[in-house]
Amino acid sequence: MGSGHARVDDIYGTWSGPIKQLCLTFGGAPVQSFTKRNIMSAILENKVCLVTGAGRGIGRAIAIALAQAGGHVAINYNRSEAEANAVKTFIEGAGGKATLYQGNVSDSFNIRGVVEKISGDLGPIAVLINNAGITRDKSFLKMTKEQWDEVIDVNLSSTFDVTQAALPGMLDAGWGRIVNISSIVGLKGNFGQTNYSASKGGLISFTKSLAIETARKGVTVNAVAPGFIETDMTRDIPQKVIDYVNSLTPAGRMGTAEEVASAVAFLASPAASYITGQVISVNGGLYM
Ligand code: NAD
Image (cartoon, rainbow, N blue to C red; front, side, top):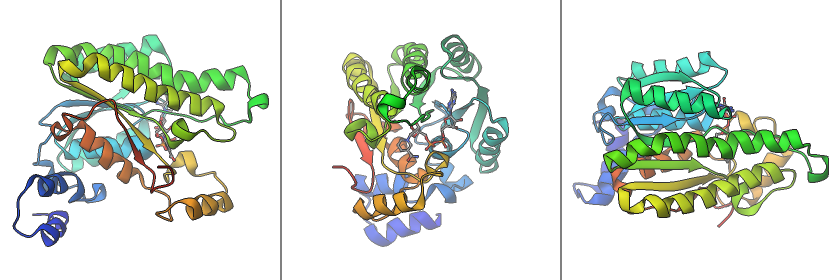
């Protein structure tokens, strides 16, 4: 039993109720301590899992968490093959399964073809995580139409394309999990981010509507709304802004990609079968 399991056992003793099982699966071992042994938990039993933009940051952590749960992860990346390859190597080194798929999610024709190729190579996609995202921040009157379109295309329209291509396989199988990575900014707005907040708010409405359409067919659709998470996306935020946000955050710190991935892995699991159309915030209490 891994060290993470030992920690859960410390808390729950010999009791083996469902909450302990959940902790063993998702809270027992931090993503960083991913080992061959805990892959064997196989909650996702070789299910094909597509994570868009999985070469780094939150997508990377989600890919690892899904592989840790036994899934065969299709790692989508756009430009950086080296980063994506490092994620694949990491997963395979720990005994998991991962395959790389280059594709630009904002190119409708291209990304639909990639989804078809994944299904042809690995089998129908059972778990889809729409994670790829960008920012192009500007106060509203200074924002160009190009900056607006770019963010809407990558963050929102891509979800239309990828989901429409992946959903038929889930419906045929009578089982599927879709998790859309939204943002705290999609819930409350933010200065300089009318494009980004519109895309992330749009993802939430998309999630709720699609959840209604698929609920009776075994496919759940949920969103995760991270707060401020330490990744490349937040790397250039000035330290004084980070300090200010941390001072407003009940947890007093930024979150990690792994903390977001834990929520996503739970929603992707069979354990979350009666949760659909929901938005789970992972934000240290910054917005409730
Ligand atoms: P990141 O910049 O590290 O990762 C974004 C990923 O998306 C990268 O791998 C990038 O290559 C990929 N990507 C971008 N454009 C793409 C395209 N056209 N095709 C395919 N892939 C593309 O940032 P992150 O923080 O890991 O962000 C992941 C998701 O989480 C994004 O949707 C982001 O909006 C969301 N999010 C992040 C934070 C945060 O604080 N970091 C907060 C809330 C939501």
